[in-house]
Image (cartoon, rainbow, N blue to C red):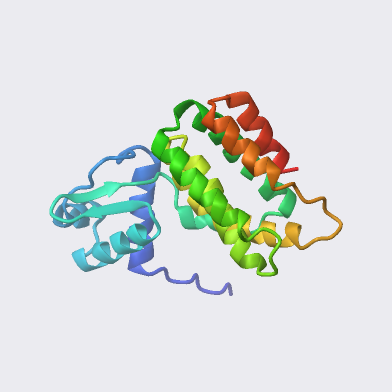
Length: 216
């Protein structure tokens, strides 16, 4: 006799129903979901259960609840699932993915940066430089990633910025392993200055090259 199937909770079923409709385009990115009573009727589950499912999807970044306006689709994929996959990646895989984001962002930053961006970049780089070579590795990494986040933000592409924020925790773990590894060559801090200089003079190729050198 086979073992009975595990009974799924009603919240799980509601989550699946909402995700399916997002995945198949019924509720595309930016779409406002039906009001809660209508949503409960569409899914065929109580309003309390639907409310809890919406709460879960809001926490994970899939939905955005705007007070007095409604609930909107914020992402077509669950960032928590993506983060779980990222957490299982190797250092080399993380560096490859980091390069795909940062190098293109550096190129865009050189073309799109504003004077305010340059001010923020200089402040972030100075804070990182002040911690370079110190024994507090974690403090240095936090400030190094803050500088790179500023570079990505200077591309003025909110998708890249948000993606890098999700990815930063995985990058942090990779940096802890690479920087503390005496067998790995460590990039010169001058490369960070080269990156900032290239962005300042709006040289996209030089910015991409400097960022690529930082990831070797």
